[in-house]
Length: 234
Image (cartoon, rainbow, N blue to C red):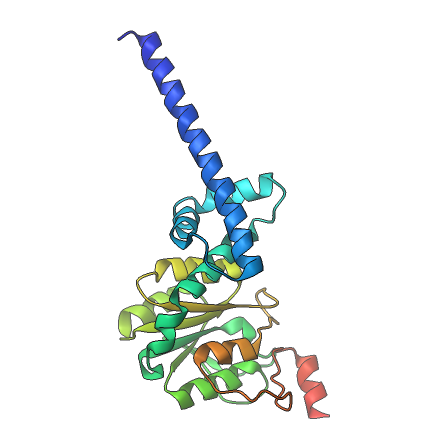
């Protein structure tokens, strides 16, 4: 075989691989948007394979075709939630852990940071106290962490069968990806960032398996701003 023939075959292989990736990414993007819109599983293994293996490339591709790259993380989270929800619900709370992000804290939070994360003082200034107290009441081990390194330590040092996490879509997707051996559930933040974030408290409690009243008498404050706390105090 001549060098010319070798490069010709190599070029054809590159073209085939490139075409395959283009079809795969396009198909996954279309199916993923359908999954988010219609809330039903469509080829979940294909979606998770593409998100996990071609994560960075998939994000760039999405942006190139005019779609926000965040949709890749959203697809990963929503598909895993749907795939794992039945198994997660069958596991007893005492065998689950609830992981909350420190960014949900009130701006004037006085809680200390220890090796296991933030130690809540139950000041009732933010939603963390509500979720923590309910979780512990049900049997969950609850952790409030400032970063993924703490999550790694928690996983290594604790025995559990399932995990429920709250975070921004990107952090949530990457953590769920790394914890794919467990039936993981995730609730994305409604407003992300480093501070003053927001979560749908009712959605977290529902994922936890808490029984909530159907009426609207119980209002769960999902914000952690000092302004919200001042309004509550008036």
